[in-house]
Amino acid sequence: MSVSKSVEVKNLFFKYGTFKGAVNILSELNLDIYKGEFMVLLGPSGCGKTTLLNCIAGLLDLDKGQIWIEGNNVTWKEPKDRNIGMVFQNYALYPSMTVVKNLSFGLKMTGASKTIIEKKVKEVSGLLQISDFLHRKPAQLSGGQRQRVAIGRALVRGAKVFLFDEPLSNLDAKLRAELRYEIKKLHRDLDNTMIYVTHDQIEAMTLADRIAVMKDGIIQQLDIPKEIYNKPSNFFVAGFIGSPSMNFMKGKILSNENIFEIGQTKISLQNYPFINSIGSDTEVIFGIRPEDININKNNVPSLKCKVELIEPMGADTLIWTSIEKKPISIRIEGNKSFELGDEIEITLNITRASIFDKISEKRI
Image (cartoon, rainbow, N blue to C red; front, top):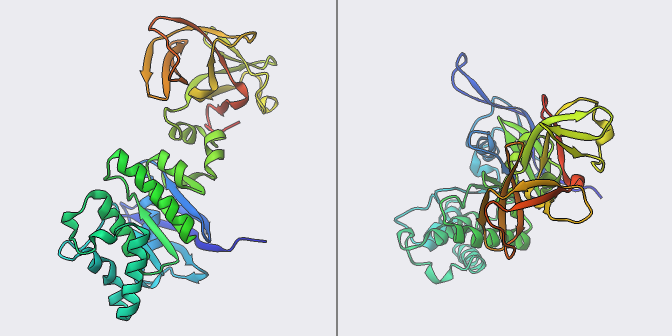
């Protein structure tokens, strides 16, 4: 049984500036988002993720292409006619209105009856746990409470698609974690389509059904979080996803020996799944995540290193060493202890490594 599409972005072009000085932000971008899906647009500042969201919302006019929502071509429709709810980074609440008036304002503009408005506001305020401060004004609320009101204002309209533009970036770490949970739970309870823009890869990994990783207006990889983390399609995705970042070393594959060579150090690639697809003497970038490096494993060929830096992180500890003067981080359990200068032997889990072509930077 096929899953129907909720939002379709077809061959989208968008540029800023005049004809001669125009800068392409999005070019030939295509994206299908399915009904009930939580899609995250992830990437660094300037990659085009917010521009794409604003095109879907109708806040920007396309240069070329189409936007379809719930089977309707809405390319040239006003935002209010697209059946969407949008939550902004800066809350965008009316400061002179109470919470209840902020929640009900959109419905009043559509001519909804007083009974329907009261019912909707009661449902949404209960769902978002904001019933106790319906008669306060935004200035009397905390950042987390304001963002709940902003989300609630989108919910009362009964939209089919919800768009979130970095809604948690103004909050502290504890509130971000709490509201991530609330948004995830909200999606589970409502089962509406949600499109969420963020530059925070932790938000993306915890919230998304699928992630579209973007760079320079191009979707670099579109997949479920687990696949993006374990099998990044290129060097950019590998470096952007993960905290701390993946370890990288530049070197070459030795002829017919299944060996990665960096300086005087040789690392066996015998168990790498795609080793037979790599040509002899190929210049590559070898990548491995900190948790895929082990210390002091018996009966396994190992590399000798020294502990150069220790970063306690609570449940985990990061140990920094180096291979051929290239810094390497290792994630270990927090209850294990090492001292600066300790000599250690490390082994790499080659089955979980990533190897990228040095020129194209694509995963091999």
